[in-house]
Image (spheres, rainbow, N blue to C red):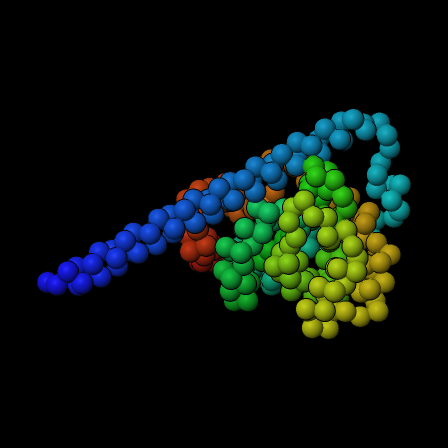
Length: 258
């Protein structure tokens, strides 16, 4: 073998080794991001609990915010669950999410295709509960405004699509971009048929603000540790490190056989 060929193979091996190191570093950063996002959302809960304790006895926020107007088709106790999928489905997934929560976005990115596949097939129904943890922990009003806008989208029969758009366009956690109704209306343009005068009025008037407060209160009363809280068959599958979209799909298919 010529010196030139040996040098070429050595260089190729070095490039391959470098690429492997880069991939390892990228995977480490990805794991760190997921863990960090989960911790931040849990810390947000602790901050909210502190705020609630500090304001104990200060009156019912839902009363001061006006009458509670649940979005169309809301289910469950106090009408705080927004349903997606056929109600005849034998398997139910309950999801508590905050549109500003990074860990919620990580969950959505990983599980969205599987959830859509199962709901479209009539095997799964999902009940979404909207939470405002990050507003309490980081400050701002983006979680609440986004939740109200999502409830307005439910009125228009477009919740699932708008829900996905909000997570796909989630700002950095420290950026309270969703506090701007203009941004929420802009994103509505990505959902066919959603950006209507009725939707705009609902968003700008904060029609469901008090309902959002009630939804968050239900989360607190539930004693959950953070967002996302994803409950299936009585347990929080988001906390199960062995859970994957494929495993979840098998669990749903098994539930439909029973």
